[in-house]
Image (cartoon, rainbow, N blue to C red; front, side):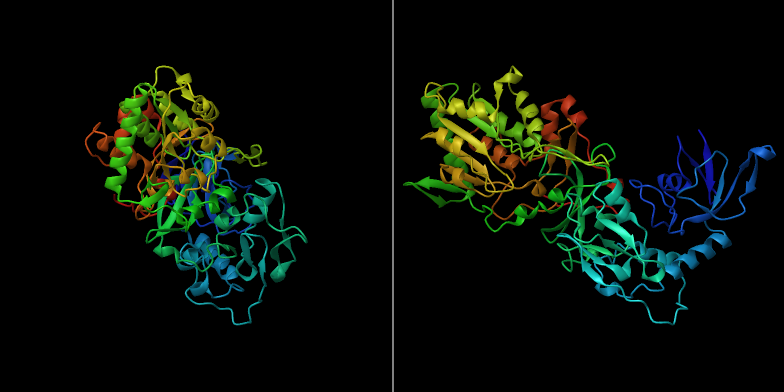
Length: 548
């Protein structure tokens, strides 16, 4: 395997890679601004220049120093190279570049949202001068609203052109460009073309300074107060890897988490801003039961006991096949399995089905390869897979439409339905509500709606950010995610509700919802396929998780 030496450290690499790529893979920090692994290489910021000695094929492959400094982001790595980023010439270049970048940069770190995660701050401290030699007035650039989600602070821009290349190469929409020359040069949008593509929020992530900021997060929270938890897109079937940034039980923003096999470095704006329902004012916070035609609030023990009694009554009256289960595709695989085991424990011939799968338009793929999925739920395939573990034949797990038709059939023998919702909006299923008629409905949901009003027992569930589990995306990839925040007071994870109901029905002993324990019960094949997030993905300090 070929090797290069970077500041005395030997680094192995495979394939065609640049010096900077080899260094980053080996955990060696070389300062850089314009380089991004998902974009073309322009080598414009010049702070990554280093002294390089390479074998000279014209002189018996003797290692000879290249006369000028070399951009490590652009120079290909070759076996036997020696790279020096701490030599006097390299250090002098780093200081010169930092001094140049800070000539017109405003000293507004205390009011900049990027403070705390700004490469300009970090590199200024590590590679810059202690004092500025610039005494002239700084050139002031305008602040602009360039799109529905992004605000541009032009005077903070260092012209790395990452955002311009992103709009050209990844989205193919080319809203951004470089305008002007010299010290009046700036990034801007073309007249009449706002930055409003479906991936626009990514320019905030890739901006190394505070030039492009998220209007939704602007002045909302200091980043050093935030905790980050690895999670999976809970909105669509893409399975995008994300970081949930939260503080004191509230989510403040969602950022992409690198996974080159799934979403690479990007997420859609739909995923980035679609988490607000987690803190919706209409969240259900108390169990309810029907009394004299109206729902009343009850405590959890009474609600679970009442639901258990009603479900057992239906089994006794209707016989085998009297129960049905509809598991929302918004739930984790482990929760689907726990609910399925509960119902089949009460009624071995119960009907199992996957809940309504929302679909909007068609999949949309961008030139950079990122795809926005039309299926607006994270786990329809995982829910089906989990339920199929409880039946003899896969076809015995019904679709939502097939379940609705069976409920309409008066000869089916179904007398009760245990259903889950957990959609990111008030999901109104008129067909299901109509098909139920006077059948018993026990519903687990987060926002309620028309279906919730018909429930004999209504139990408040938790969103994906408030629990752990695994989702299977549209490509069949099973990925685990961690709990970011505690469930809303009065609500419980659907998996916990399933276990509590099983205990109330006398099927199991009381237990805490543990996805890993349930995966073992689901079988070694399932457990081995789940990819757990690695904390090392972030390159940041170890994350803190919420203890249940």
